[in-house]
Image 1 (spheres, one colour):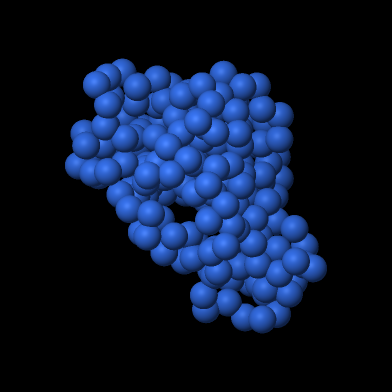
Image 2: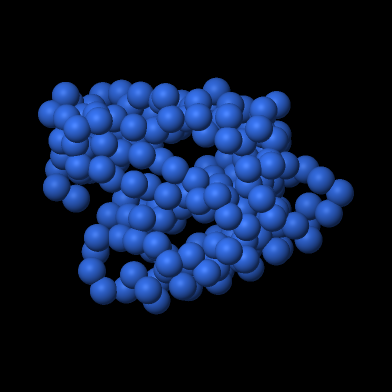
Length: 185
């Protein structure tokens, strides 16, 4: 997702926890990379022209397996994680593995980005986005994810059960980022 093309580039990377290859994930009836291409066209609303000219915010997935994510070096730009919470036969085991990967990832981020306040998650908060067809399926696992998320202050959770809801949230999310940048955050 982007705003102006000539402003300061603000990357907001999102880890993707869905299995060994996020590019193979099919969500909301389409391949995940295709969904991300659509996401790139989302326009923030209620943002001043000066903010859009001054900044170019891009939400981008980190296209790697959970094991590769834990080796990731560029952690300052990580603003959140997108989790495949689609119902499956072994959902409990799957989400437990994702929760442990998230724990290790957040501990590494906190350790490696500890000093200044310029890391994306320190400036804008850390987001955990569950993509599922039914939020109630994930609700029983939320307390465990809450415990893990407490590693990073300011973590927020969202559940997306439809592509339209994801797109609406992204427009609002981008608006909040642009407005925070305009305020000098």
